[in-house]
Each structure stands twice: as structure tokens, then as C-alpha cells.
Length: 477
Image (cartoon, rainbow, N blue to C red):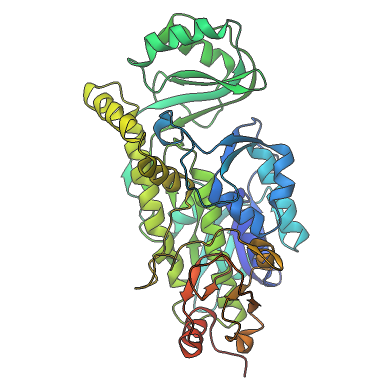
């Protein structure tokens, strides 16, 4: 058996790679096992929403991602209902970044490797046993590895989750939809006329310009088929002809994909020394483009807490807050995707609700609420009674020392003090401090966790010390 690791991660998708990098910021020994030997054979465009863009900016990754993506306005995400960008979005990154998924995965993997993570491709986890001191992981070739913790980031069919015996209740897939980006061979006017005539009877169904001469094409599939293989252009042509009477001359696909409407949520995110994150913990239809974002945000929540446990300074209940905070967030995402899928139905009732919601979204507060829900900028963790800002993420403020998020790159806590009289020096190995009376805050002082969420608000040193102890453990002797 090889020398033990601190953490073994099963799966090197966006969630696994992000988690590995977050752990390495705290010098945790990490081994990532990825069963695939090569990148995916098809290129799918995914969308990074505002909160994910903020987190990438926090770790200095956004500038590496931007050249590979295309920005879209932060609007029209909920059930694809056309709506303008709402007023009052409090983010410096108020847009959607459309980017090829293999590019995201490559850049996140390179980031983790640069920080010192070990990543082994073509390695499949087939079993594990845990005890009071760690986890023994068995691979398909019989190799056995030892670690203090195991995290399953191995997708919706997670082997880790199944072996752990964690229930995955929800609804199985009932319908299947094809989605892709491709060029068309007929004028836009002809497309618009045909889609308008067909769309009401067949939802989800659309062909929309997506830039660079491409069209976003969504069309119902004939039924739930073999989702282990990507669809072909001929699959799209057949379904378009069956529904619209024409294939619109589609050609030169940029990417092709298929999805079902299965919706499931793991009953638990942790059993002993084994945890779940990303699609291993939750699956849902991709409507609204929340899946990849939800998993990456799981990793940012879990990384510093698991690192604190391994480094020995975590308060007793810190690791338990991962499930306590992220499970309700996933429940909310599953509910809003269920609602969105209903709004794509061709039945009279859902169509009437869609028309009503379309009217309501003319109200800016309604539009903004739904955008903040989809983009996760509206997430508020339950940290107890206090101002509304408590438990929420803090936007990227412009401070006298530069941008706020630049100060969070090391994955440490941050005390932002407008009073210039508070201190976190007894936690200086885990928490940075900045005194800035000019900071654009409506409160005197905030304590930020490494994931950018506000853990405390106030101006009393003793109260601050209590919360530093709660989130960052015992002070330096």
C-alpha cells in the first residue's frame, strides 16, 4: 500500500478539481482518481453564473477563463422566459460566461496540479472501507490506497455514494431532450415563423441565435434512450423533421448533448470519513444551467472546512456545517428546476402559469429574485439571528488596498474592519486583517470565511473573538 494521503477524491470533473485546489491552498495532501483516460469526446458549452465567476475571481482564475468564453447578459435564465437584465444586481461579474466544458475542466485541473495536487487518470474506485482513523480505497486493478478522508465527486451514478449506502431519492427521468449548438441553412425569418407555430405544442423546443453564426437548438427526443452516448447530428435532423416538418438545414455542430429530467438528492452528504459533492450528491435537469455551478460551489464550501479538520484547528462542528449549508441549497435548486420544467410543458395549465409569470417578470424585484436564485448570488446560509447580510456572500468591493476578492486568493478568512480598532491577530495563521474606514459597507466590521460568506457583523472585540473561535478554532497559544 502506498504512503497515505490526507484526502482521496474520486472524480476529476469541475467539482473534484476545484476541491483539490482548495485543499492544496492549506497544504493538504490530495490524490484525485479519475476513471476516464481522455477528455470527453464531445464539446459542450456550459455557463458559469455570477456566483461561480465571483469564486473564480477570488482565486485568481477568472482572467484565465475569460479568453476562452463568451459573455452573455444575466437575463432570461428562468425557464428561458425572455426578460431584461434586472436592475440592482450587486455583482462586478453580472453576466453569464459561456465556455466549453473541456476548457473549464482542463484549466481547473491545471490549477490543482500547479498547487501540488496529484491527479491519476484511468483509475477507477471499486471499493472502500473506513475506520476510526481513515479510509482504505480499492481500485479496479486491485491497488489499495489509504487516506484520512474520501470525497466522492464521481457524478450522478456515483460509485462512492452507492458503496456508502446513501439513499438518492427523487424522480427518475420521464422525458429526454436534445440540446446543441450548430449552424442552419435557412433564413432567420423562416426559422422564427416555423418555431412560433410549433413551440406552443412542443416545449421545450427552440432554435435561437447564439452568436458567431451559431444557433442554440433544443428539441424533444423520442424517449429516454441510451444516455451513455452523445447524440449525433442525424438525431437532431430526425427529431426536427418529426416535430417541425423540416430540419432547417442544420450543419456544422459545435457541440451536441442530451439530457433527461431525473431529479435526485442524496439523503446525506457525509458518513464518517466519506463525503459527497457535486453530481454525486444531486442531479437535476440542466434548465437554467445550474449543475456545474452547484458542484463547484459545493467544493468551495467544503474545501476549507475539510482542510481545517485535517490541519487540526477545526471547531468540533465545522465539518458538519458543509451538509447543513449545502443540502438546503441543493433542495432549492432541485425545486426551481422542477418548476422550470413544468413551465416548459405544453399542457394548458403550465402554459397559463408561464404566461402569468412572464407578466410578473416585468416587475424588477421578481425578475431580480429569480436571477439571484439561478445564479446563487441570493444564497444565505443560516448562521443565526442578525442583519440580512449575515450568511450572505460579500460582493467584490473596491478597497484602498485593491479589490476585495484579490485579498482572498490564499483561501483564508478575512477581517474587514471599518472601525480601525478590532483585531484578529490571535488567529493570524488562519485569518487576514484589513482596516479600511472607506470600505463601502453599511456595517462597522465583517468577518469573512474563505468562501467569501459573512460569518459575523459587529464592532465588539469580545463578540468577534467568540465568532473567530466558532469558525476558525482556538487562537494561537
